[in-house]
Length: 219
Image (cartoon, rainbow, N blue to C red; front, side, top):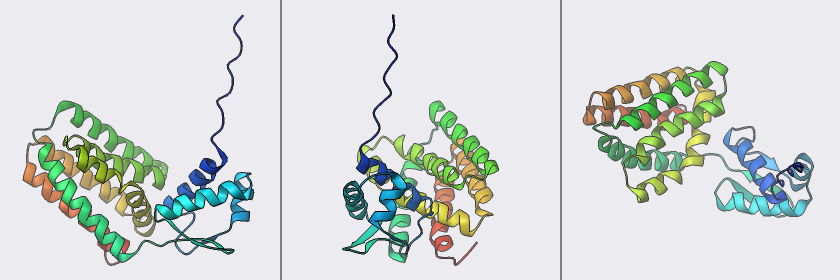
């Protein structure tokens, strides 16, 4: 007689708090300038304050929060310098990677088409967080296929900042959702045509736009 399988163990308390807060910061439910208290977070997640402190310390190390003893944790706003640094790093990595993607391998073509379709579907559903994730995955897939593990790891370190900025842009400029998808289609078309320099120009225009949009200087 088969015994019923045991339910998988739940994640440790600190991990649950960490995931709860990080997700809320990245999708901007906790915006920059929000003060989080240990008591409120402990109640929201259903844990004691000790794992809350552990989770907040980890998030402070990642640059998302600033801890203030006996007060709580302040969600840090995205600074102009951070925006500039992320965009410059993305350009260095992504322009190199998109040139390396020519000629376009069939598996990469199929994956990029799949991600573009997913982005359209998520946009129709109005799920900005999911749109930002599929948007980021589109770029990350090109970087991964460049075959440079050091650059891939460097790019992965930008993930949280990319997601946070992506949601901010789409909330402030809803029309950019469709424009981002169209610009991804242009990148893919250039890759499909074997035009490495054309694809790099599309990437530069597309990624550079993030800086002015997050600052609210352009549409």
